[in-house]
Length: 137
Ligand code: THU
Image (cartoon, rainbow, N blue to C red; front, side, top):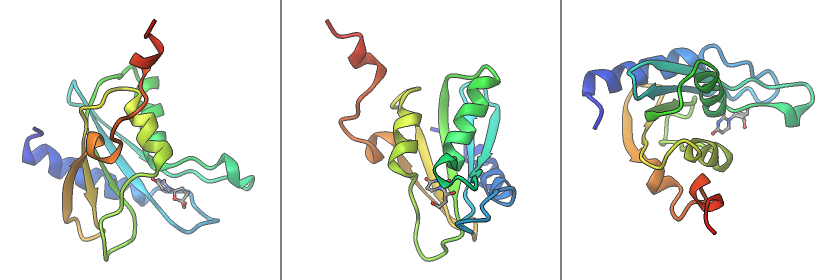
């Protein structure tokens, strides 16, 4: 269980990251803040491309940045977009990429107001495919 003060940092950092989104095509900015087991926070935003299919989601940007920085164990992620009316979860591709590094991940869905709800990767991606399956005989 993440300390509430750290959750608050994740929430504010994902909102700051959303402000750095490069999304001229969708105009749908997304921000993510990933908490490593060591206590570091690595942020990500969506980065789109004129060749649309090359666009990258905020959550995956955060994961790839974190891995490149040497982190592979994560305990929580906060994500946000501009939708104020409801809590919005990560897309399926991002859920699977997060799953690569463990199932035990707290997920904080954050509204632009800063209010958030807690869920988990286990809840968002039940019965998931994982690296462990590749090790089966
Ligand atoms: N997007 C994310 O960054 N994360 C998600 O989980 C869903 C979608 C981005 C991709 C694209 O740049 C924009 O939102 C619209 O789909």
